[in-house]
Image 1: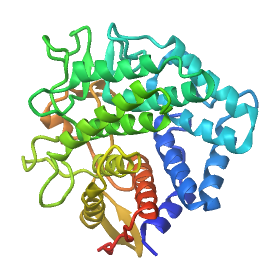
Image 2 (image 1 turned 90 degrees about the vertical axis):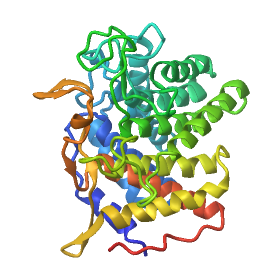
Image 3 (image 1 turned 180 degrees about the vertical axis):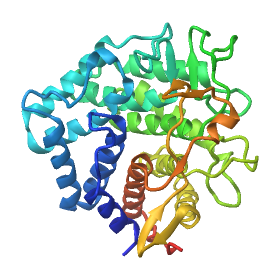
Amino acid sequence: MNKLEPYFKAFLNQFTPYKGFWCYEDGVVLKGAMDLYEVTGEACYWDFIETYLNDFVDAEGSLKGYAVAEYNIDHIHPGKILFFAYEKTKDERFRKAIEKQMDQLRNHPRLPSGNFWHKGRYSQQLWLDGLYMALPFYAEYENKYNGHKEYEDIYNQFLAARTLLRDEKTGLYYHAYDDSRLMFWSDPYTGRSENFWLRAQGWLLMALVDTADKMSETIFEYHKALKDFAKDTIMETLAFQDAQTQLWWQVMDQGGRAGNYVETSGSAMIIYTILKGIRLNILDESLKEVAVRALESLLAVHGYEEDGKLRIGGMVGTCGVGDYEGVRRDGTYDYYVSEAVVVDDAKGVGLLMSTYAEYLRVSLSTSSSHLSSEIP
């Protein structure tokens, strides 16, 4: 048996909530468990989700530590699991919790472009992260409960992000935009941050394919346009794949520069997007081998054994822009390569769980063989 599956199960068995309240980091792990449950049917993955939700969602659908008034777009992400849990259990507390999350989006502050602010404390700012945190949830809500009425709003937020953050020369996306142009990290003319951070690009890519997956094909105009947007962005991202490792660099366009490194979580996000893009008929199946080789390489480069157990490193702990916990996150190259690189982080492992689940889906639907490489 491939070593990834026991690695994931061991991780879930010892998992401790990242912050102790409803947060996106836990949501990444929950989604990974959901994806693996859907493709494998193994009860341990649902058991993990159910145990977590029983602790974090009360009888009235209130979420532990969740405050709508913070307008933190990150806190929408774990709400994606609530749709799955409600359909599986028909427990009304999950339906109530979905509405509490949607109430935040209904009233969330917006930029003049129509994009949601990243957070109440990061006013007038758009980060690529936020597209992933909110828009797939928003699309699933519209698809299931609101008759597709706000598809245009969802699609327009992607279009606006492309206008505000895409670099015409490289096709890559800057991490963040400040509409006020007052933040120390923003360009006074464009409002953009300075660099192309890998995981931010990954959030965008996953937002595109996950939202396309949730949008109804009956609304052809938006569904088709979003798939085309996803295809273009994936293909532009592939141009920055490292030829030697088949992975992607922490600062995407500066491969080989001192301090830079091929990073696990963002590379997993790109692999996930390629595999899901194939499954959704966004990408040609010929790209399957690109994704499989990259996944094998990721495990070979960053996987290792310690005391007989698999560990996976090469994961950047966190990156952002703006002052945070005493760190002046200025968006420079030196900043992005200075953040701690960690092992077995919840974000990295959760993203790998989703990536491996997509690998299994594609393998089941095509002639793909199982991963051939052994973890060194």
